[in-house]
Image (cartoon, rainbow, N blue to C red; front, top):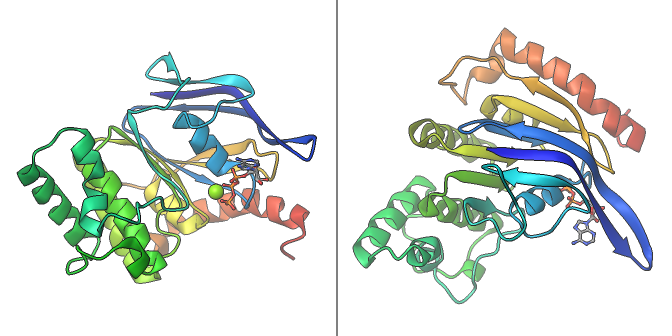
Length: 258
Ligand SMILES: Nc1ncnc2c1ncn2[C@@H]1O[C@H](COP(=O)(O)OP(=O)(O)OP(=O)(O)O)[C@@H](O)[C@H]1O
Ligand SMILES: [Mg+2]
């Protein structure tokens, strides 16, 4: 479904250029849920930006369904790290943007937006504007927006980062249910190792900048997974220890830990 071959990305600043990501090789199957974890600044968002066609790699190629991504990739829905809600639209109108673009009628838009407003716990806030919401509420609007848009592939950049632990577990559970029912392909970036394991079929661990994929781990935990309790199983703890061993090296070298 999505293929990265030797992808690298370079940025320039003050006449100097630096590599943000290098040698990214990754094959993602249709219907797969892949999670991505790695230190801050290692290029995770950059990789999603390239996959969405918002920026071009300097080396290598990205293919989506066998076609090289060279412009904005309209087959993916992208929930960016920083929400990009339109300030002049209400919560409901923001969520319905994708449905409007798809030419859906008012009734269907209403049905879909209310379904997802309810799912993310924002009932009663339909007429609020983004600037009247908290950070976590804005994130939830962005989540409802991408789910209402209903693309075949979801790129999600720390979608639950600003949420409290309880709500995060509830929304993880809802996302897994939607994924199971709709067979979407999902690339999900997170800073939370437990979240990466709870959700993913595989976890890609990035090295520190210039980010590359250090290792990819299969998560052989049975599904459906109970997002509230799966972390307490021995199988989970075994995977968590293996992954943390790989991940912590990236932080120790950065001088962040230990
Ligand atoms: N548009 C841009 N122009 C210049 N530099 C950029 C741009 N986007 C990202 N960078 C740089 O590329 C590097 C990787 O950034 P990126 O946002 O991909 O990291 P990340 O892994 O998503 O980090 P975080 O976990 O903190 O979100 C950083 O050094 C960042 O400053
Ligand atoms: Mg990022």
